[in-house]
Length: 104
Ligand code: SF4
Ligand code: SF4
Image 1: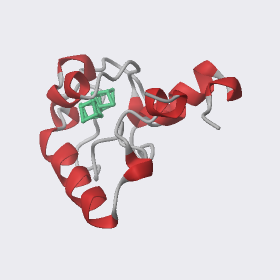
Image 2: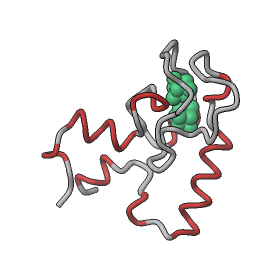
Image 3: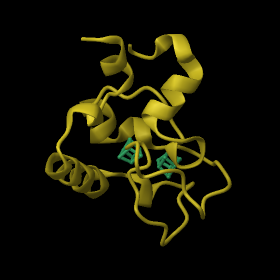
């Protein structure tokens, strides 16, 4: 596993457009955000951990984050939280691990 794979947990770099669309649908379907205390009703799409979704435009106050109880979180071995306000898994990983963590 390369350095970037460790950061790109969903493997989006290697996906075709079709795989990407399917993966996004799978993640938003299984996402637990709509049941989270921090979530603002009606915000969509959820699945904020997935890189292209982006942070929420409606969620501004962090209460609790239930990501750690989510099946997607376990399946992809995620290790950050509050994706709705702080940015996606890959984005937070790059911020916390710095440019040196990026693949070549
Ligand atoms: S880890 Fe969090 S943001 Fe990602 S799908 Fe699960 S609940 Fe949603
Ligand atoms: S990313 Fe975390 S804090 Fe934000 S809505 Fe989803 S579970 Fe809640």
